[in-house]
Structure formats: structure tokens, C-alpha cells
Image (cartoon, rainbow, N blue to C red; front, side, top):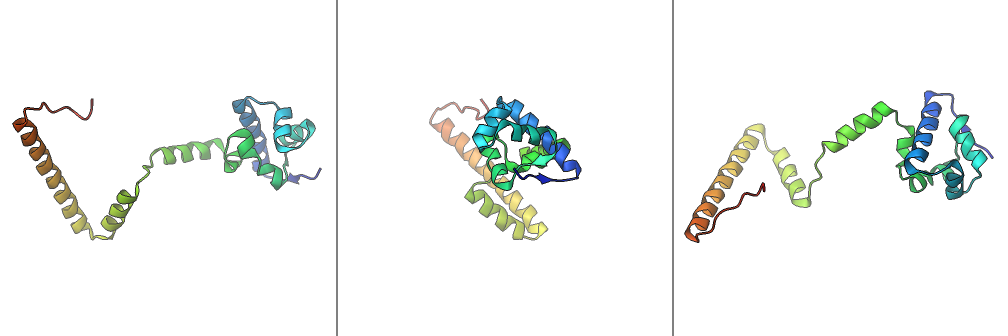
Length: 145
């Protein structure tokens, strides 16, 4: 069976990450072989010799091992940086994205004014709701509970 051989640090990292993925998935090399259509000796070669799977076999790794394909080629430092970067990102809905797009087009002085207007409007709404609840004799509840 043909395999790709790289003489870079990438191959050693690939071997380590493949072994880690097998361990984390709780499957044997034989089971990975079954899932991607090769024998256990081929998987052992991938794990121990620096040989890379053919691209059509490599493409089966995400489903077989539950890791995105790029994960197998990251260093631990790159993975930590990627996780930290991803964890700090907020996914915006359509309205939020549209608002941010408009906001980004404003000059800085208008962005500051826009934020102050929004803040003022929230205060007005808070006062309105407090008055409404008071007149209705309803105790306000904290949204942080």
C-alpha cells in the first residue's frame, strides 16, 4: 500500500496525535482500520513509522475518530491557541451581525454617540418597566436568578 512520507516534524506530530485520537475515542488500531478500510498493520505503520495515510483514507478520519482533519496536523500549542481563540468568540445571530456591520461603518465619534443613545434608551425602558410593574403591583424579578 502506498503512503506519503514527510521528512518534517509534521509526521512525528501526526503519529502522536493519531495515537491520542485513538485513545480518546477508546478504539484500537484494528478498529480504526475497520472503519477506514485498511488492516491493522497499515494503521500500526501510520502510528509508528511516519507514513501518512492516502488522502482518501485520511478523509475518513474525522468520522472514524471524531476529530476534524486539521486537528491531526496541529501542535499542542497551536491547538491550545485555537481553542482559546475559539472560546472567546461569540456567535452572532443575523440581527446582531447586521447591527455590528452598520456600527463598524460609523466614524468613531458616531460609534460613541450610538452607544450612548443605546445606553440611554435602555435606561428609559428600565424606568418604564419599573413604573409599569409598580402600578400593576407586581414585584420585579432579577434576570440573573
